[in-house]
Image 1 (cartoon, rainbow over the protein chains, first blue to last red):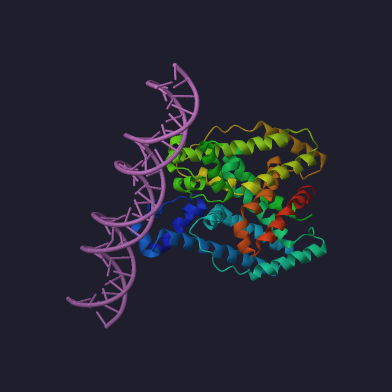
Image 2: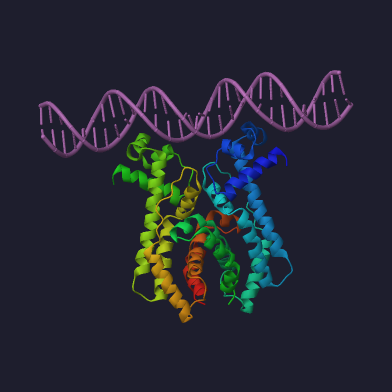
Length: 190
Length: 190
DNA sequence: TTTTTGTTTAACAATTTTGTTAACAAAGGT
DNA sequence: ACCTTTGTTAACAAAATTGTTAAACAAAAA
């Protein structure tokens, strides 16, 4: 792997994997085992590194979901697959969404082109169709997306806090998360 | 309001309200309209200000939930009230949980006493009772808490990102959020 | 009034973090 | 071999951020 790529991957590991959003360029360089100046060489500035990582994360998220969402399989299976993909990603990068939020809220942030994903529109239509069939409750289809993504992501994102608040040991929490898929499916359908 | 309190409130506004987690002491001081040295005078260091804010946030969260959870009202009403309280808080402080996560994950962080909330145990028992009654599905009662809090918090926390990804205008998003309470209740109770 | 105590500020000092540069090394092409 | 491009590093410079102090000031206490 090129050092440029190594730096990016390491940054992602720190930001998305460890939730260490305050990481300095020195800390990123150390974690990657490279000289700090290389970060400036490849990315010009700290901000640009952040932006790069940010954009790639959004792109990644989008393409992953697109892939699942376009598949020509029954709705329930599609949702099941959606959960699988999401869960897998969350295991590697529990804090990716948190990072994105933080970046969006931060001062020096430039908003990029916001064009609606075609895949999403497609999926929303399928959701409406399911609602008409009576498989799921009738609401604005985005509410379905809210419900689904919330149930998947939130318990993972909040792990450090909930382990404290709910006083659940690490192993137990892991086990609880592993049971989530079925619970979500039960919750969503019927 | 004393300036000490003003500083704390302003910090909370920036962190929890605006999601601006990178705020410097100068920015906090400016937002509060006080001299930066006052922050050091009252809180000794930046870290201690953060810790203070952090601890108060956790304490607040806990006490609020406790109040709701101990009430002697039917389970469904209790959940309904739980949603109300949570929603109201989320309106003021959408990013409070995000802040807590970020702080917990950050380097110089000291973990405090983690004693299980008595109120929570109490609530979990009620959940189990409801499960036995058949009102809600039978799982580990913590899963119920996961489901409930996820459905409430996640769409709010993710607003900046989802407005982009789902291409939903501000007003529409607000409206969607306002409909959530009923949707959550429908979702939770069969 | 005088003293004490607590509050507030500007100026300074120290530290941390970031950005730049110049020198050097490695790789690739001619 | 030579030259050119690219990658890498240490050292330095600049900027940003934090922490400290002394002095001014006001309010309360003696």
